[in-house]
Length: 224
Image (cartoon, rainbow, N blue to C red; front, side):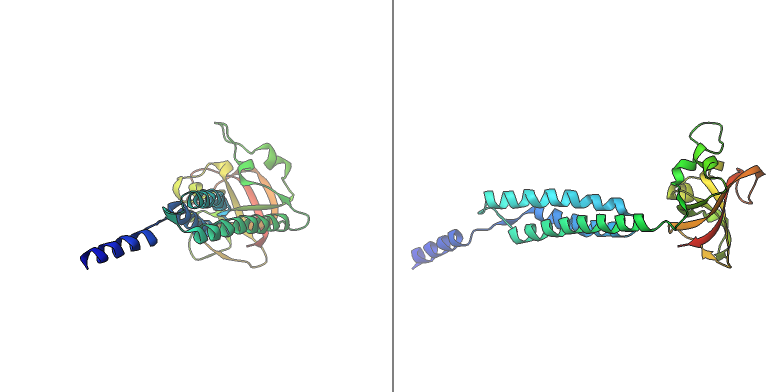
């Protein structure tokens, strides 16, 4: 009787061996979940995690098929592969559409970094001089020193480092924005999209709570 029980337990172990769930499949699913944040501007770069997710899923599928008695999770790996690929394709299509349609007609897209002078003696850049007096479209963040509550005027900076962690911005790193048409906006860490008439100050202009003079101004007709 004891011998029969031992034989039965041994047979069960052979018929139902323990198989570990593929770590690569799990990581692929985790990368997919984190990459979902890439659908939200301005976190587009997070979508790059889907590439790692696809690679992890392919590794998982290969390992499971090569060692079927040691690893499980083939369905999970296949799902993660499809999910990461779909998210990558959909995310790229979404942000491409936004990029191609967000600039109002008659406006020039100006990346904020093209307004920043890289030399030691700060001054307006060539790009700033070229778009002086023109309608531009630009993205940036409201500097906390602009004040609280609903704002009609504020200082716009190009990135969160300058906005919240970089101390006082240089003159070429900020734009004095005036909203037209009775518009107001609440400060915060949200990236803003603005369209309006850009100008370079001909005379030195200072703002309260800022150490450096402001080189640039924007009369914004549109704010998102």
